[in-house]
Length: 378
Image 1 (cartoon, rainbow, N blue to C red):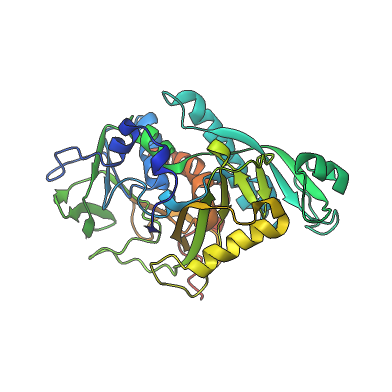
Image 2 (image 1 turned 30 degrees about the vertical axis):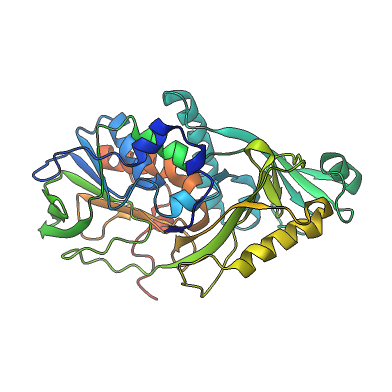
């Protein structure tokens, strides 16, 4: 769920905006080989991967518009290497594979997916202070080297530079991937599932029943459908973001925890963790805290104008790792959920895992890490 207007939609062409509201006919009575439920980045990349893998007729349905949930409010940053300091090794491996898959899509999708290659610079780290295992190819910078990249910092800072990370406009990526899908219908909600034995034989929707061969649920949080006995703990975490008015500042890509340089001299900042705030409104005090933080590091940004401000709710499981699994007890249904901070980054590799699993019965590497049943003892 995204509240207020993020910058991403205004960057799209009219054709890309129209793709987000695509509404093909023929939902009622449809019999796709693969039905994907959910039109965020996970759902769209999964539908694209299944179609590319030759899994037959692929249909995607989405309750709202494509990218209307957490996808449309995400930063779009594709930065696996900094996660070496915070995430377990299997997760970092997934993230690295995700970035490589994004690079593949940039080459294979007509017109590309809007991938922008850029570097990541973390400010004020201590060389021995991040973690025992350092990211690959990290360059430690002294304060003088940092000052050459970012003049006029409020105080001298050390830095850690990681090259060849990336970002995307998440809505542009969704629109361009969706343009190649055979069947997409927005404004259709999945409401129920009919199960016989170990198979879903019918999915009831607001536009009629669908009889799929296989189903993938990519709904952010685990799906809640009548007739689908699925109990996976999850919650959501609110976060605020903003984009400044054009500035004269030229950052060397992503500067953590400050901001990311985007188009037209604007800066993308935020990504807060507003635990306990379930209000679907932008909190001005949080926006003010973000701009105050910018000025504290770069005094020339004091009084900078805010062009866009928004908040979104990111789905999360208790251990902060996603689920990528078959729906427990079912032979023809899969789900992926709870990608939290890395849904954009992980989407294409998660999609590749799911399409391969459906096609050849091959589960992901270290399947217990992503299992839907790993919370059973909690």
